[in-house]
Length: 267
Ligand SMILES: Cc1cc2nc3c(=O)[nH]c(=O)nc-3n(C[C@H](O)[C@H](O)[C@H](O)COP(=O)(O)O)c2cc1C
Image 1 (cartoon, rainbow, N blue to C red):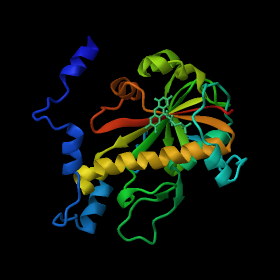
Image 2: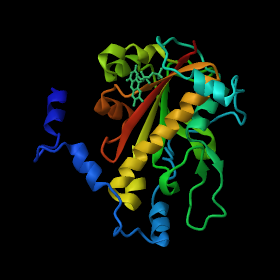
Image 3: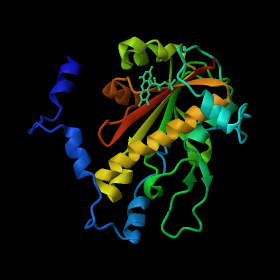
């Protein structure tokens, strides 16, 4: 029933041209487009969070150190592959920290940059606007962590348990059926979400593209970090978007899940 209602909310096409073609054309930068003045960009950025505070949830500090990598960069790139089978494993807190940090952690401050009021991250970001958030779910497969849904707080090198519990069943229903087992077989399931306005206030339609591109950078860093830690890593596009967004308690319009990744036992 709910699925039928959602179907009705889809925007109807008015032409034979696919929405992606219209979107792509409308999101191109033209010679006559005027950018926002830097001062206005800074003012707009100040109105928005670097990362959601989730103030009501306490911060669980992550280790300062990273887990040692077992491979060179070239060996890591050569050996990254999607696992044929997702098998569970238990991560140390240091391994978890390394994966999250490589994905979207903070590497340096912005003190020398007059018009950039965000600290810089491990990934490039259009305009250094950092529109993404990272969440993850684990069901007792990270040492010393309770089961549940967590939010990554990069500015504090911390995580926050935003919903405790065993959600394997809910998540198996949120994945397309051929891979519903991933929910319980994986060590952690990562959700990369985008708060589109953090980028679109400046870059308009193209800001949407920038958010998706940035998620690719984050995912690749996660892939390489996990591979170098001798863990398995699978990128996931086959999930029911609305169900995942509802699970994360985000609206799916201004803030929506754009990519997922499962970390599991290495080969
Ligand atoms: C955007 C994207 C979405 C993907 N979604 C899934 C998925 O839902 N399930 C899955 O098993 N693999 C998924 N994959 C993994 C691809 O199937 C895999 O990368 C491809 O077969 C190449 O194999 P390799 O990763 O071992 O090099 C996805 C990959 C990308 C880039």
